[in-house]
Length: 380
Image 1 (cartoon, rainbow, N blue to C red):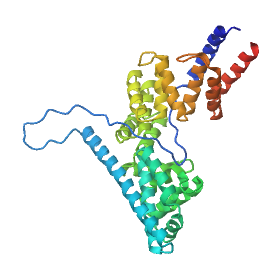
Image 2: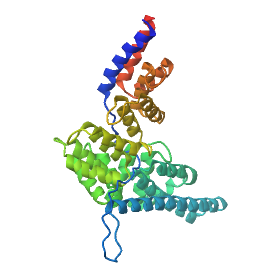
Image 3: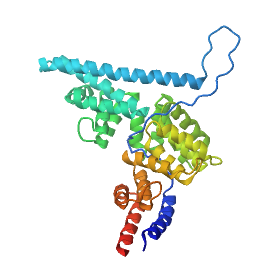
Image 4: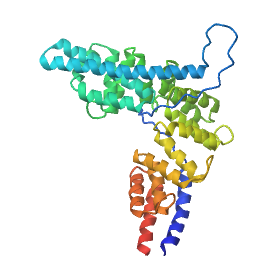
């Protein structure tokens, strides 16, 4: 078999498998790791009235400004906590047996844990990663203090311990132990635990979980708002109006995963006629701020010429960035292009590498394509 005919035959097989895989969507685990932020969509301002009174900006622009101010406040809070932690650790180094300093450091760790969860709720991965590093650097010895507060019935301390266990901030990740802490936190009337407890019980107690999720969303938890949108979308039959309302609100609040899901709905025509061009707009929005699912899906639009001009080189670039970020569907797509020489030079070594990574992550078509490469090599 010549290399040209082999590549063409392989391309036909790859096309069938890639179409069966379909566009990727974001999955969220049982207790919930979450993605990041998107630009608020704005509308044209209304004509300025003749009145000399101050005019309020349009609601969407106002929300954008509030979100930007909140982001600045969130970064400032991180810096404040960091400065206080450094000062307390220096004081503790000079006086290791000072119980008052240890208590203050534990209280600061509680504050940091809640701030880290707020960052994750809004989908700000970078800020959350900064808090994770902060815990490792400044709060390594604070767990006993948090446990002592929890033992005194402080729900916020139970929640903070749940955050540490869920994300493995001061040790191994332990979802079961995290969920136990979230349950106790809610039992102690700490309302901030509603979303996490809902994620913990959604399979065993779906009705209770849904009620808690609604309460969390009503309280402004952006992750809960998006999750309710997903629930509406997955209903039988889907409640598209509900899904759009929730997801659009979450996207305005900065949830990149919500923006990406809105793009997927447009690409697939969920609730109406498919609009790939609009889908591409959503994907660009989220991909530009780091969402790997959006990056992969935008690559698929470029590869197929849906809503954008077909451009295999651009598709390759998008797949590469998402694959390097560890996104398995993009690793599969990148492996396909290397295997067929589309958008890049054919490189079977690179194809095997990326298809292998995707196969290890459970992408079944990747294993099939690897087997085909083996048969092709054996036939030469």
